[in-house]
Image (tube, rainbow, N blue to C red; front, side, top):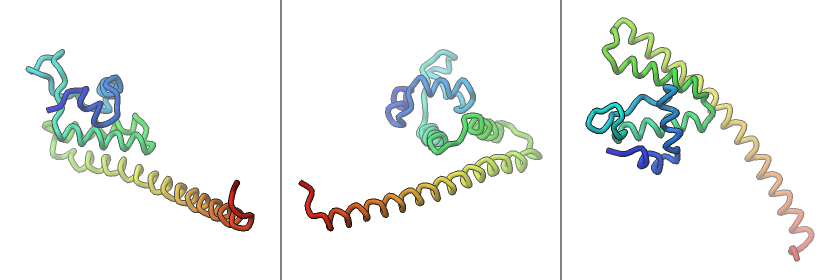
Length: 136
């Protein structure tokens, strides 16, 4: 089990931000030491993986509101959720991820275009330097 300080160190997300994400519903509430409401937060390996996933979504441009909706849908699945709504919930979660994957694909194309232009520019400078001789 990890403390909030451990999670902060392992993910690069401050303890303050983790608490904030918990408060606004981006992260579900962790278990607490001795089950007390004000007990020390305790995180499992599964919690750590999920926090890293959420952090990745945020770092790649997903809005906190969208992440919160994704998390809320997942929490519903974890509870005693009526079976008749499971398909709807799964569909909603997949739509959120599909939208984000589309966003990531566009980002990757933009990055690839910038990378190619940068390589071309660098090759131009290397060629120009070769024509002029060594830099003094």
